[in-house]
Structures are given as C-alpha cells and as structure tokens.
Length: 292
Ligand code: AMP
Image (cartoon, rainbow, N blue to C red; front, top):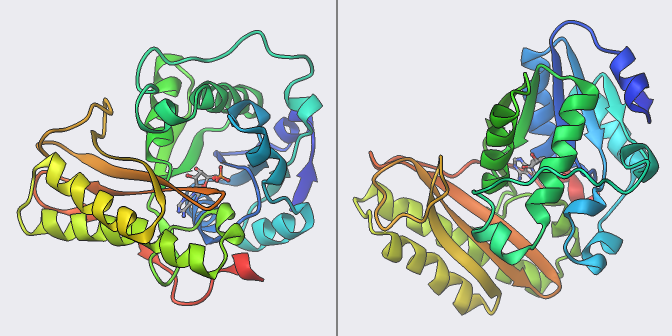
C-alpha cells in the first residue's frame, strides 16, 4: 500500500474500478469492514484519512480527536487498501473555502439540529473527495445514517458519477457501536454508553413483535438512556429517504439516537422496515483493535 498526500498523486494511481472509503482515521473494525467490502467490488481501493475541521462544531472535539497515521496505515494495508490518501489541511483547503455544499433539506433534524454546520462540512469535504479522487464507488457506514442519506443525495443532485454504498453497523461484542471515540470511555461511561444500543435493540425487538408507533419506539430508547445517566440529545424515528420524522413505521426508516456520556458524544441507530424486519448490524466476537 502506498501513502500519498496530494490529490494529484492519488489520482495518478487510479486504475480499473476505483473504490473510495472516506475516514477520519483511528481505524476500527467498522472502517475495516468498509475497506474489505470495497476490495470485493473495486480494482483499486483508496482509503482517505482526513480529520475535517469543517465538520466539527466544537473545537475541543476536533482537538482531542484520536490520530495515529502509522497505526492506520498498517490496518488499512492489512484490510486490502491499495492507496492511503492522507492530505494535510493545506492540501484539502489551500485557501479558506468560499464554496460550500449545503443541502436545502435533510440536514435540519437529528445530527443537523444538534451540530450546526456539521453537514455543510461533511457534504463539502465529500464533494471534494469525489471531485478530486474521481472514484467510481464509495462506501459509507450505516452507523452515520443521516450522513449516508445526505451524501447519497448530494452525489445524485450534483450528478457526481459515484455510486454511494451503505454498509451495516459493526458493533463491539457487548453491542456498543464501534466508534473511534469509544477509546475515551472510562469503565463507568462505557456501562452508560451501552444504554444506546440496549434501547435500540429493545425497539428492534418491539418492531419484530408488531409495534409500529414512533413514540413508543423512541420511548424505549429514551427510557434506557435516561436510566443510565447519559445525556440524551435525541431519539428519533426517521424515514430512510427524506429523513422526515415518522409517527408510524409505515416505510423503511431508522431509529437514531445521540447522547453524551461524560465528555464523549455517541450516536447509534437501527434500520427498520414496515414489514417488521430490523437490521441492527453485526457484532465482533472479540475485543476491538481500538483497545490495542
Ligand atoms: P469516521 O472515521 O468516523 O468518519 O467514519 C468513516 C466511515 O466509517 C463512515 O462512513 C462511517 O459511517 C463508517 N463507520 C464508522 N463507524 C462504523 C461502524 N461502527 N460500523 C460501520 N461503519 C462505520
């Protein structure tokens, strides 16, 4: 695997079907699953690693975001990446961007409501990656459900010739959704963090048993999170295409939760269907590589 730091060097490596997996680094099995999926469908797999200042709404969160290029390079290579694109902030933003990609809808609820400007930053950097690297396909995690919908719609609206593919959530053995931020959780916080997935799994079970009312499904998550002492930002049942809040699960959608555990903000979701099926992702059967 080669490590490159400029768009032109990354583009020079293109051949055949080019797959892109955009990340902010500090890789875990969730990222690796995306890379492995990409190797099955693409001739050349590009992994980008860029902690994008434009999508952070809190300076402290940006400052403490975990970074380790050598570790990430070894993991990405092992998973089958061909090229790791790790640009500097200057390469990504040679001058402060006056052009931003802003969606006229889809970004005002859930994460968008709690993280002002976040999706402008995401849509802008992903548009830059799509334009500058020219991938044929790009993989995104269903863990960031709203982001997946936003990026897919952005690519479609701008006629960017990239197929956006969603990949199921990868979870730690106890159910906690993998996140680079999990490394910050102390033992008590980790215990509280489990309330997110526990609430979501209860809601998925309720759907399998016939429950369709949005308030009831959201309530199962709210109750678990409240009991743990974590600070709930939202628990919301949203339609998969337009992200509008659903009173009833009468179309494909997802139930998303965001909560603060100590200083760490976590998100998670389950994907639900009106036919009563639920997609909660897959679990590791051993401790995550996040913990060394
Ligand atoms: P990040 O580095 O957190 O920006 O994530 C990079 C990509 O990996 C995004 O498309 C995420 O949705 C995806 N991702 C992060 N965590 C997980 C997970 N636990 N399962 C599946 N995909 C994930």
